[in-house]
Image 1 (cartoon, helix red, strand yellow):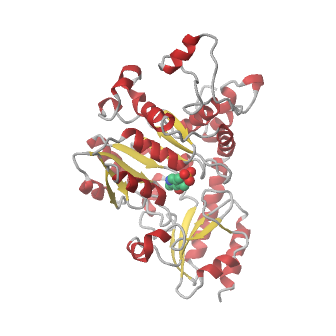
Image 2 (cartoon, rainbow, N blue to C red):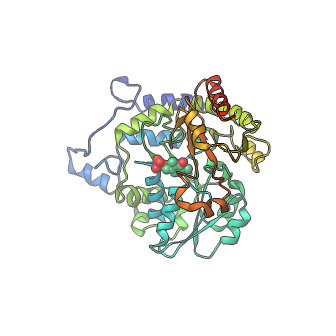
Image 3 (cartoon, rainbow, N blue to C red):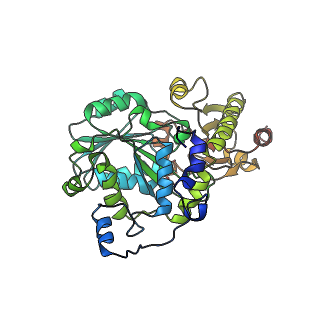
Length: 414
Ligand SMILES: *Cc1c(COP(=O)(O)O)cnc(C)c1O
């Protein structure tokens, strides 16, 4: 295949083109932990980064490598490292690159566990500013001489704010900051952060890319845009061995994956790889369902507010249209005061009460009582999270079944 094929065709043929044994169409699940060499020089060369190869599976394995190359292709990136979970990818990225005394600017709407891990890093010598990332002005105002990284998400969960990603990209480039974009909520099918000058792209493979709620995984992709040669946080020993453009991702592989140990299991890598083959199909369907549901909920007399970038009154609706192929599969809505949220959720039959997102199934969760419970009522009010908010991750069910399910759940409240 010479001309670059489309998103799904490329994924479907990726394993075959690596020429696995017997003409297999899938990369096999290599369960070996360690790799043997006939000549010891081969082992030494792998250790010294002189040849590509595998020595010990904590830091690399052909099955995880096949998935990594697919994520790289999907993101139009340079190189990818996979991890056991999305959180392991985030943890490893910060841990591997950021030095004591540095300052990170992060969106105040980050996924709760990401916010929590950054908060923990402040206890061991990092400075973090959490700012409203829907305007680059807030990033500029938080900038300090020791700022080294900016971290945002494409669409925030649960209230769907969209970061001012293009302008933040320009600012990061101007100041030489590592620009980390968590693309989990959009996935590379809806959006490629390289187009807004991201340096590193995080994906929780657990969500849309794996897509079936049956395997945990995470990844970080280097887009190739950041000039690692100038970054003072790179270990001198790597500079002698590694091409400049690969310094960042190699340091993440060594310090983050090899030393951190959050390795993706080959079985999970295979499950995620197979799931990814239908990413585009699933998202077309889920985003279509989400758009229809958002319109329906927005018009419903028992609903006080719907948070979905596809609605015209969403504060970043224009940005969503400009940046993303579709407006995503995640939305939240608030029931009017007096409607019993738990009773409403319990009446739903097709929609499952569950905390995951990016699944093939539609999942709903009451926000204030679960994922934002630890924050307390006061912080929730500050963050604009109503006590009656429900987050919905819309799946690929037949649309009429979803609509009917909501209709009967609302009717039960009348
Ligand atoms: C779920 C999620 C993560 C963490 O992924 P896990 O695989 O659950 O560890 C990170 N970022 C975002 C935006 C997420 O939704």
